[in-house]
Length: 192
Image (cartoon, rainbow, N blue to C red; front, side):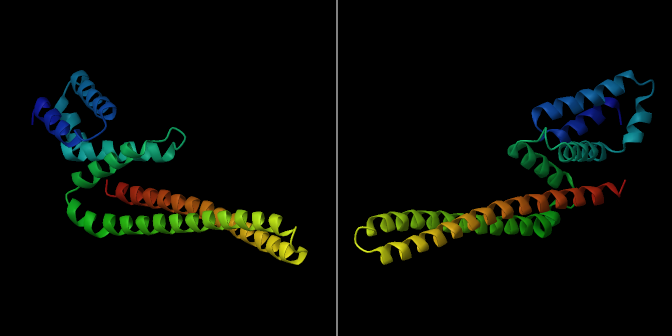
C-alpha cells in the first residue's frame, strides 16, 4: 500500500471526527510519513488504517476522560462515540447489546430525575400555599394557623429533601457513567 492510499483510507475512517480533531490527526500522520525515510515501516508499525483510526479515536476519548476540566461538548462526545461504534467490525452487535440497554438505563434515570424534581417543585408550591393559608388563618383561629404552619414546614422539608435527593442522584449517575466509560476504554486497550 502506498503512502497516498494509506492516508486516503485513514481519512475515510476518521472523516466523522470533529473537524479540528480530524485535521489534527491527518496532519500528524501526513507529517510523519513525509519526514520518514521509509514510510512503509511506519505504516506497518501503525497497522491497517482502520487500526490506526481506532487508536486515534481511543486516544481522543481517553484524553477527554482524563482531563474533565477541559471537557467536551455533548455533541462532540456523541460524535466520537458514534465514530467508535461504527468503526468497530462488530458495530451492530455492540449497538444492540450494549448501547441500547445503556440508553434505556439512561432514559430511566432521566425519568426518575424528572419525576423527583417535579415532586419537589410541587411540594415547594404546596408549602408556599400552606404558608399563605397559615398567615391568613391567624385572624380566624390560632389552632388552625399553627396546624397549617406545621404542615407548611413538613411540606417544605420534604421539598428540600427531594431537591437534595435529585442532586445526589444526578451526581451518582454521572459518576457511574464516567466509571463505565473508563472501564470500557481500559478493556478496549487490552487487545493491542
